[in-house]
Length: 131
Image (cartoon, rainbow, N blue to C red; front, side, top):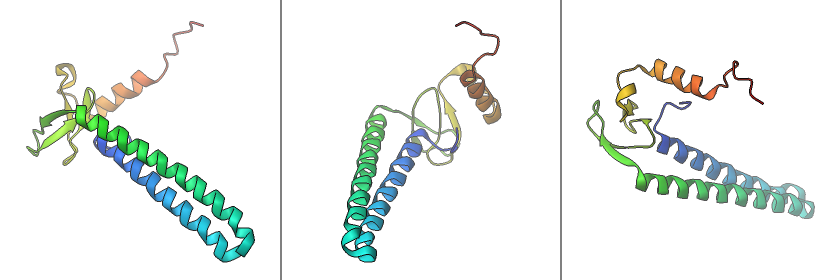
């Protein structure tokens, strides 16, 4: 995992980032009117439209994360003993970031071994030359 955090929290982080980008684009676009007067209206319009698109993307990500959160499996973290939600075969605790799994085949491996397995699964096999 890139962020080393729970998957739901990673989705929410991207939603927050898009919200901040959208608001920043809207503010900077509107500032174009202040700096360039009438000519800045075009800059303001472009900034407002791009900001609106970013805010709509943020809305979609937050909605998607909320829908995933409602169907996520709730488990108790063995490390911090708090209730956390888990997506997929492996995830991290939302509070202490301990790697969690419900798959007994990978229950006793380290984080480095798990990341190596994920990297090996994502990389294409060089021996496979089927076209």
